[in-house]
Image 1 (spheres, one colour):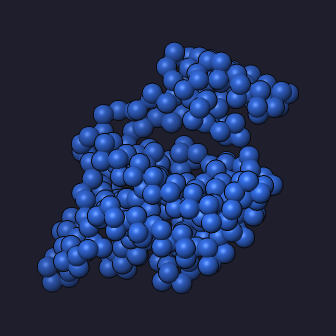
Image 2: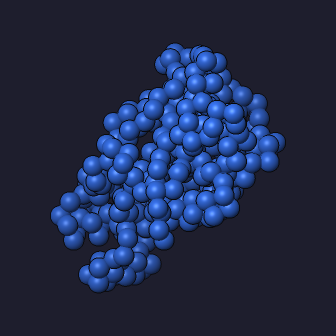
Length: 319
């Protein structure tokens, strides 16, 4: 597939900072279609805890990579990379603007840049993969993960045993290259000129106290909307990749009678705040982002819209 420096608008940032509403506004203004760049919104039935955009909120704007996996299935950055690039091509073929929206940094990075997350395996790598897959079938996921731990403790500490594909990939990388999968940062991507597309990368942020307050309030709203009942869907399947998301795993100790409901809720809020901080740090350190604070300033929001129009080369009379 030829990318031909197609224009792609990307909106990133931490949770609860206004990415969804902005993306829909821009899609309506500039004939956009939205690709979700969130690692949990791909799962069916997990709507509240993932802050999944509702049909009403979509306002008729096409959305992709939402509800494309069952809860028991795995989903990787490589899956997102391959599907996302095809979606960008298809959206451009329809004459519309692809708008990628999300906070999962590795997904966004792998989509936009020549970032190898698997590629075409060598014969040696393919043979090792087949051997590891057979080992997992005969010995189980935990035994496979223990094998990873023996060769790459760093990777094992960051990869859940249930994510078999990633465990296998980590063993492959360590065995064949001597390097940890966790130390593979990909190419130097400081300059957007190196991207596969003509990218306008918008980052949303705001004052830290304001952001944390919005996160806390969002969790309270999620509880009234049924977050606890949604978490119960994963109560007996905690080894699923989908069950590792913030907003679900924190309730498992409560279900086991180890902590109170209020303690679980506070843990969701704390982990959400910590995650937001990590998201901001990741994007600031790993990608070239235009940062905007549209929550505290209507003027910033309008300036952002005008900036997108200029990037799209839309005449003043049509802005």
